[in-house]
Image 1 (cartoon, rainbow, N blue to C red):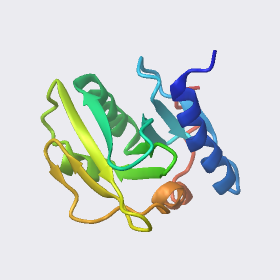
Image 2: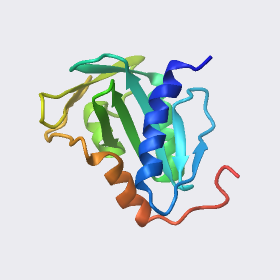
Image 3: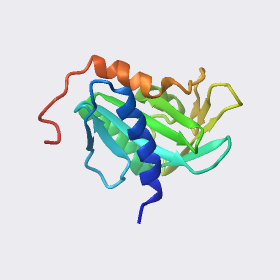
Length: 159
């Protein structure tokens, strides 16, 4: 049986494969969440999805999720949270943006909300604040591509 999260993670990987013209390596980041991966040996991604068809999309973050993202940041240096908003698009948040909307205090349960009017960018809010800028639909996978160009794969990580 195909699990729900596999469909939504598949969208992320399909877009990555089609946009990384020189290829992309993906490894599972060791964790119990089934949400964390390492791209090209050095870029962490944490994927959340919402099955809701229309805006706003809401994503729950338990303390263990935020702790895992923090560990990835410490180990890899670069980590992004990817929010798959139903069939609408993928929101790309850097670790620094994540800390604006979910601060350093990891409560037991927190949330992020992504909303978007037709033909507009995403507005992002969280338990601890809101981004003061909009997030574009085309930021994914562009932001990861730009970072990847400047990163050299670490062959020893997760080998």
